[in-house]
Amino acid sequence: MRLARHGAPGRERPIAGTADGSWFDLSVLTPDVDATFLATRLDSARRALTAGDLPGVDRVERFGPPVADVGKIVCIGLNYADHAAESGAEPPAEPVVFLKTPDTIVGPDDEVLVPRGSVKTDWEVELAVVIGVQARYLASPDDAAACIAGYAISDDVSEREFQLERGGQWDKGKNCETFNPFGPWLLTADEVPDPQALGLRLWVNGELRQEGDTKNMIFGVHHLVWYLSQFMVLRPGDVINTGTPAGVALGIPGHPYLRAGDLVEVEIDGLGRQAHRFGAA
Image 1 (tube, rainbow, N blue to C red):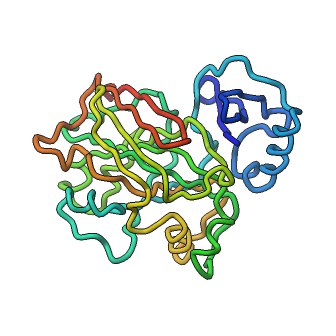
Image 2: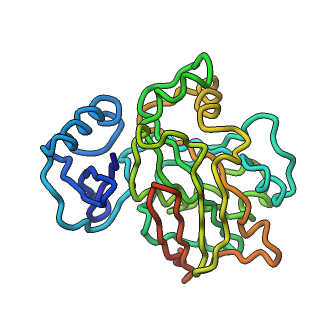
Image 3: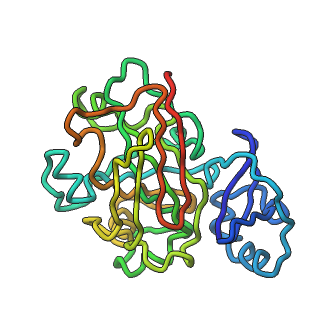
């Protein structure tokens, strides 16, 4: 089942979809796709969709972020060996963890802003994991699957000078406004039999820049959910950005960082496609 939200920013309505591209109104069951829905109403929505009990939606106006009121975005750095190499870093012995604030989230096709003074704004296609059941001190990675509501696309936009050259933590280069296009939809976990078998691709102005596969993660999805649960409580509606493969501007000769007017297109197998234009803050 695909879960999404459509409509004007701040006025999105929940919808559920099928693999053939049909969409159905979820507002008869829930006011939104949020933490409460993911924790308590996911099965009832699936049953209603399967039974044909949801009204059809003729036109999707605009995809917003597929989950409303995200609690936190937990990000994993250097989680593909090829990306670590292009960044000049050794593959980590444990996951590298940092946070993005939820207010960085925008819709998959919304404008993304190059920060004032930025000359090193970069792209990162990432598999996003959405939590549906609280994960707290999980005993092993085998327990992680039961805590995952589904999967979506994130573009973990980054400003490399702010991140790497201005001292302190990475957060300054990760939390600029609009720096997390998210969606277009959340594909429920039952539709993703193996999260370590998904192709990821990203284009800038029509040129393929990133092409990877989640099988090449250093730390897989289930390991990450288990690992993070040892340090923080993961709650329904939380998002984990699981890292990016090689091909970012930081690692390309000449460093072709993003400028206002550039178009970034992102896709992951089964999770749809993003196309966001960059503007000036």
